[in-house]
Image 1 (tube, rainbow, N blue to C red):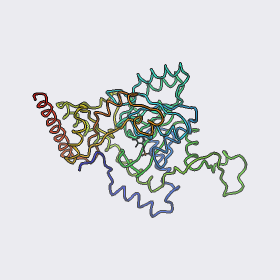
Image 2: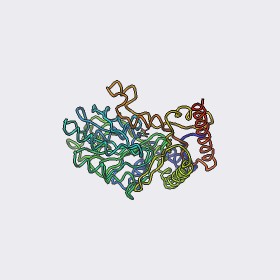
Image 3: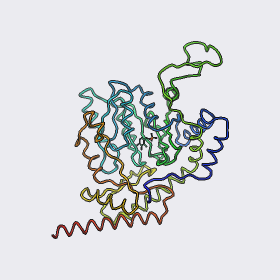
Image 4: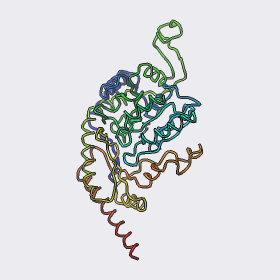
Length: 393
Ligand SMILES: *Cc1c(COP(=O)(O)O)cnc(C)c1O
């Protein structure tokens, strides 16, 4: 089976982890801060707060921005459930903004329309979470403009997009957002096993997220309500969590980051090759804006809805580990219970009827890619001819 995604672990990654295992600190040692500063300088943000998942990072980002009961968070329905769940963790409400049928990202036109309506009904969001789907940054400049006009905060869910760029700046520079979040799950661009990070240029937000990832505790005297009782002293100032990343994970991350540029280059090369091959086939592919360098976490094709399921099954049967990103979040039973219904976000639902994620990872060889392309075109041909014979009959 050629999987749709796969981590790339080299000897240098293993050595880096073993070094930590043989050191004095498995967690809360020097490697987490080292990883954080590598991330911050790589993406051009001032602060990075490493945590045990992007889900935790999203949760802390929402809390740091003061999201709570009575507030609203808007995101794309074409995402992993975590981009929406973070609002519910804070007791806030979620709503979705339908996607652009070409980029599969949240549609900025729809966002603007929804904001106009929400202003009239006094239901404006406190936070908007643009998701950089498949590694392509959303149009952040326009979303940022809207945020100034309508007064909302922005958390970029950049789980797919580390190593990508927008308007010649790395994704995560937070030029147009308050906070950006990356995931280091093994299927993403670089991995720490499980892990995530929140980056920001705002010191108060960084301090708050850093405190909340470790129980709401501070050891910083200047934050305490009175003089320390002694050298052992710390204070819990608010209710936080244990969302810490370990040094073992961070060591893997530090080492993985050294390959990031190569990974992005290879992913872009594979994407280019896929796109060239698919020009001749009745499939559509994601359009990528000229001012974006996609990190290409995913490579998605859309096939006609009438043959989608059988194309998907045929590819799986021929050992191509295709997948589907994403089931629109509002169609999940949990969200339906909250009152969301089918038909609310027609572009995301139409996309779901057609999308197939093809194998995309840096160690996918050109030969393997050709096997994928060959299978896709064969399966499509079979379906085209069987459809035609149906028509003739
Ligand atoms: C993977 C992913 C997450 C969650 O990341 P974890 O590190 O697994 O918690 C959130 N949002 C998107 C868009 C993702 O792809």
